Image (cartoon, rainbow, N blue to C red):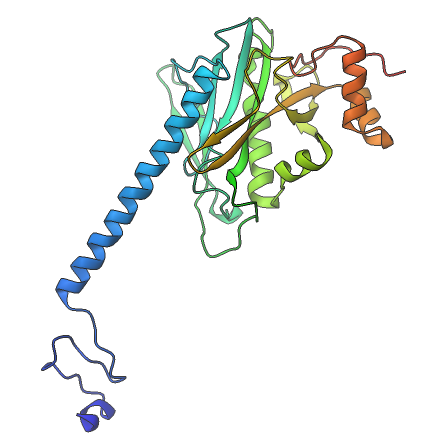
Length: 292
């Protein structure tokens, strides 16, 4: 046997096939068993994904009071494994919500390769072309490190406006989310840690083109404040960990400069509160609050 192994011959007399290194290859029965186990693991993973999705959807309906009955997944938004963007009116007030929906997925955080970005064009019933951007996942690279107690990245982010806001139809929040998600995936921006440590952070100079009152906009990102929005709380538990709802609030250039020049986001929030202004409801194009 040793002579045959050294000569590179394979020995067929054993239960499996032995190669020149003496390693037995799998039998067909073993391959089938491995395939069965892999399919079972995939089934369990998909069931857990569904469980998390349903738990998150229930939170949006019953705790955030966002009506997602007519759930709309836009063709021109970024999608990622287990995630999308959603929108819907509040069932408790005259407000309208946009939200990421899947950053708290069990497959997050994950590593995305910018070179694997794909653009697919679709045509709707009105013969209007829209663009879908999707990412392929690469598991070889090292994803962002977050606490194992968090559900995915640990947060979803919402934008809130009045239902009758004149810029609502432009869908500018989706442009914000595209930029926001891209930075998280490609730059490993740990926003949860930043907000946890400082209470807020800014996201600056997002290009909105003609869909906005100015060419770009900036935002203050804070935990959802139940005293400002008709929601029960900002922190929840999903089957895979802690979920915090963050709000991206439009701020003016003057307010951004105030927050950046050593004043900080929390002092800007104090100015909002002094003015009696609900900063978590975005109103693009509004005037600055009194910063003196």
